[in-house]
Image 1 (cartoon, rainbow, N blue to C red):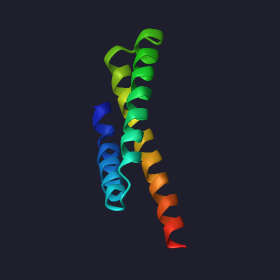
Image 2: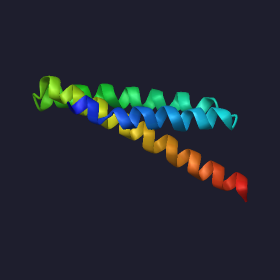
Image 3: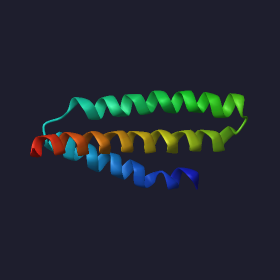
Length: 86
């Protein structure tokens, strides 16, 4: 259930990164997903080991990492495209 809440963020990230690739930016989407993977690992360890949330903790960590990658990619695209328009 928790992981399904993160589905719009997965879709949003893929859509934004597709647009970035269309703009000729191929390096940034990879960087965003690498950072998201590292954040996910860190949150997994924190929520499972420290807070004892087990499967719920991993689902929350995954959702938060997906949300973060979507927001970072969208913000980068917004700022980058605004700069190209001016």
